[in-house]
Length: 143
View 1 (cartoon, rainbow, N blue to C red):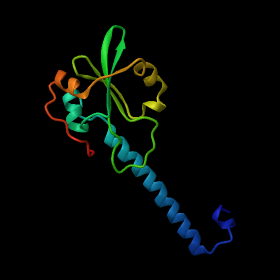
View 2 (view 1 turned 120 degrees about the vertical axis):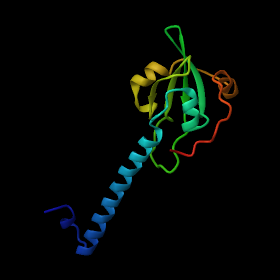
View 3 (view 1 turned 135 degrees about the vertical axis):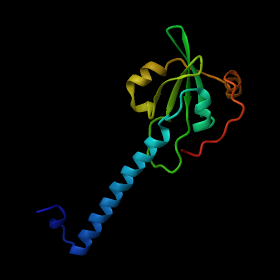
View 4 (view 1 turned 60 degrees about the vertical axis):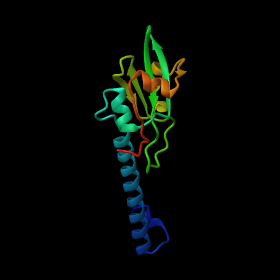
């Protein structure tokens, strides 16, 4: 005897609720897939690639680690997704502009936070773009 068999509703209503539940689960699965596809840095190996794929970052900060300077760029959240994350996707670049690490939701990844979220200092985007030779920056509309 299933859960719906115990409810005082007609057979067609049971089918309706079953189909509605299946559609909700399908939507949640698709939404998660879309979010993951949108923030994964496929083809991004340099700062220039980042700007071409994701557009202007929401924030740029320096992170010092063992005497080396890294740059933490936070991208915009993807459009057309209802996923609620605790922090925007973050991408870490070394001082030569090469991608060394990234996280789709840094707020939920304690190891990533411990490694990359300490004593960061904001950088003016214009200064950062000049340093890495970024001529134009687009607004990200998704993959």
